[in-house]
Amino acid sequence: MSWEEEILGKLSLRDQYEQKDSEFIGALTELRNRLILSETIKQDNNKNNEQSISKLMSENLQLKQENSSLISNVNQLGHSNDSYQLKLKELELINSKQNKSLESLKNKINDMKQELQEKNKTIEIINDEILSGSIQNNVLQRKIEELSKENDGLIQRWIEKVKKDAETMNEVNEMLAKEKQ
Image (cartoon, rainbow, N blue to C red; front, side):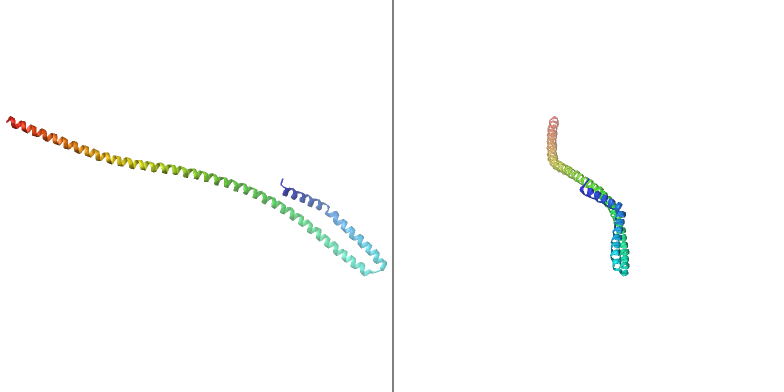
């Protein structure tokens, strides 16, 4: 229990305690007022001043009305205070839930950021592999082109050699055929 809740609990107990005794306090206040009035009346009786008595009676009545009004206001304020305390507790509960939700969302954001960083690293690795494969492909393409040229050159030389050999054989065959004739 936090210190705030403890203080609010004690204030609530105090208010309940005061409300229990408010009737007694009102009665005692009225009794005191009557005693004061009674003493005042006794003193005024000694002076035989009827106007003072009626004035005191009206003041007493007015004070009683004010006292009743004040007690009523205190009771209403106590009830209002209780309802505000309940609303405050509800708002604190809502705030606590929202703080938990906010913390959960922050954790989720952090997890997503880490996942995004890992995916970016993976993309960088894949891009590096693609670049490396592209470089190897270009090197192999050049090598294929060089080997194709070399192969074309070898085939051309072989064709020329076979052509020379065929011409030489044809010449030899012609010579042999002329000699036979």
